[in-house]
Length: 592
Ligand code: HEM
Ligand code: FES
Image 1 (cartoon, rainbow, N blue to C red):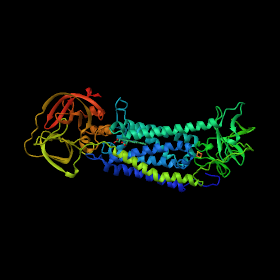
Image 2: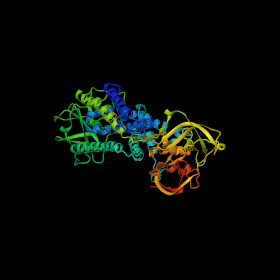
Image 3: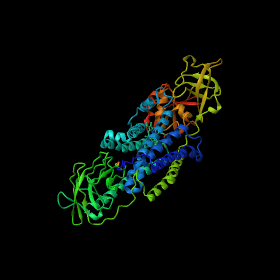
Image 4: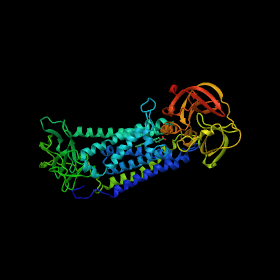
């Protein structure tokens, strides 16, 4: 909006800033996904989906941090004002990237469930607010929900429809979204990784944001204190020397107990209006007089000096104030006139210095120096810096180990004896025992008639060290002897470790364990995938124990809520073929 009716639309600097933002995001994602793995020496990289999910999540978080830093940056140095003009675009971009993060999460952790992915996500974690199990996903959902509302109402239509105060109140919830995003990362990804890089980047982002806000608030307080000493007479208050009001600019006065007031000087005459812009409460006192109108530094709304009204056809109005001179000292009546009340500007004879020409508003010509500095820094610095951040964070991924689907080996055909209790197992003549599992997040549906029979099974092998699992396509009876090795007891044990779903832990996902994987593990167990206990230290040469109840029966439902946490279990160990099975009482599993 402008008195000259120049629409606040696309212009060169706005396009450049949007292009720089898009390039920065692309540089970040490229560095994270494509370049970082080249610099890593992992057994096998994490799954593509996991990498994408982390790349989008961290990108959305960093962008949100940057968006929240723009406000205080512009208060500290007006050369950043062009960024403020693009803040809403950056906010919408943040929401789009967060949506890509959510989509990647749904496509990986919550797909292949028996219920739709969104339902699986919302219902995945029953262990809300147990000491160790505070789930991090609901905080992500909250942050994303707020970002969607903000992006959906970012157009000026909603500003007019909702009225500026309501719109502003809604958009202030972005700080709540940021707090929720911080909790999401602190309770989730940070607890799930041993690498300190993410923690350092998070602390640096959060810390800079706090420092920027404090510095801007401090600068504002100092400016106010220098400009407005409380008056001695009531109700008039001193606004300091009249010569302090720069020609074409303003000072801000904070009358005790009242609203801040901006006092502008234009052609040697002073006018006072509310310091809060009627658009989004922008700081009018940091604006300038452009084309004879007070011009807000944030989005360029304009107001006449003599009555605080926006020039036709616009209808915004500001409260105006009376001014008077006592010698060379300016005094202000802090009682506001109703918005739009005419107050004749006060002529002053004292000379004043002109306001600095660093003012930049979207629709007006930018001072070339300010534009050169800012755009130079943006075009060169931001994509490079953001790309480097992507590289640093991408490199920090924990090693998910060597477990993986053996797609390359193709469909396997194996013959052995199958048993159904407590979970379907296939005993091979070689003495090797295979766990059997179905597609996606489901156990294998074994025909009861096959229990204890010799069968031929086909499927894809999932392998992690000594732990093998067959994702079964077909099981059919074959002739020949059925041989089930007798269980070999190995005594009673108390062990510390993590309960995982056997399929992801074996390597169906990389990583297939840890807190980030908790919801997925719970869905897998609910779908009939056998639980595996991963011990902190090896037992009889293995770190993986199939987990059963004290009676040797299935135990998945009872230990669902205990997955992905550090727990202590106690029970008896027995060997079945070359696979160890732990019989433990789920009621006696303790969090460690
Ligand atoms: C429906 C909403 C959301 C869901 C379901 C969700 C889910 C997840 C999951 C499962 C992870 C763990 C990934 C891993 O460590 O392997 C994760 C990590 C993360 N999420 Fe979200 N999230 C949501 C929203 C958000 C939002 C709105 C933001 C930021 C604005 C965000 C930022 C992050 C970050 C920074 C990480 C850590 C990435 C890393 O490990 O480097 N998430 N999220
Ligand atoms: S706050 Fe938007 S123009 Fe003033």
